[in-house]
Image: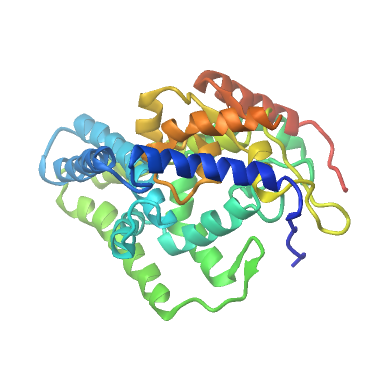
Amino acid sequence: MQNPPKYPTQIEKEFAATLNSKVNQFFEKSQLTQNADLRMVLKTLFHLTGWIGSYLLLIFGHFDVWVNYILWAILGFFLTMVAVNIGHDAIHGSYSKKKWINDLLAHTFNLNGASAYMWKRMHNLAHHTYTNIDGFDEDIEPIPVIRLSDRKPLKNIHRYQHIYAFFFYCLATLSWVFIKDYVKFFKNEVGNFSGEPHPKKEYFFLFFYKFLNYGLFLVLPLLVIPHPWIHTILGFILMHFVAGFFLAIIFMLAHVVEETHFLYPDTSGRMEHSWTVHQLYTTANFARKSWLAAFLTGGLNQQVEHHLFPHVCSIHYPAIGKIVKQTAEEFGLPYYESSFLHALQSHVQFLKRLGRVPEKTA
């Protein structure tokens, strides 16, 4: 395994110090906690109600087949909502000051079939540390038919990836639940974090929650829903198609667009920018001023703020976003943001371009 990139620590310190000072002053003057407040709790209750409610209606409602398909789709939607609005903050430790609350809410990830432990390693450690650095950022390591880095070999099929990529996005959570977690867990290589033995309890949690998820979302519906089994299988797949699509879109529009940069270390393994400034070059916001976007994405429409302040609860991103943007402009640094439609179009253009540009070797 190649050595991890190193960020220079003696440059661009003033920006980081100024930004942190301004954000800390904001919370002090506002007398706000940096963790969840009443708004976040109410949002949590809403998404949990939608998640549990749609599941119970599906299991006990005995509706017509076409109604069940709608419920499977709604369940897939709320599966993503719970992941990005509750589990994501909890795994970052930003939901509460109390570790047991974060740990408890992180189990919503496990219940939905995705290992919270592996997500923390792939997302918190690899992605947040090495954002948009090929070979280290786990979030830009998709299947071979999708090319997101010009350091990857160019294949003829990539010419059409802007068309077929969205279908594969729909498979994201299916892959996670049945393949990815197992492969990453037992291969034990995530970015540059490899070889450390897993805690024994994580072996138990991996298999316990996987089989609990299979039982709740596949076996039990097959046993109790009074329709031919094929409809339950197709409904289960539909649930994951909806969940995978929403989850992939939220993260792709934050990093894989024309405006953001894919940066690489020099021959000595050093990055050009400090870690803080690196986040500005590799991350973008969409629909920053939309309360609906913030509500549905768990604040991840403001990935710039999330990457700079992952310890701050997502409910506060709209407020500190103004500070981040103003400070970046003061220092002549980028602050990428656009509408949702522009970000979507930019992502398609990025896929189209990467489907044509030849491989770079250095």
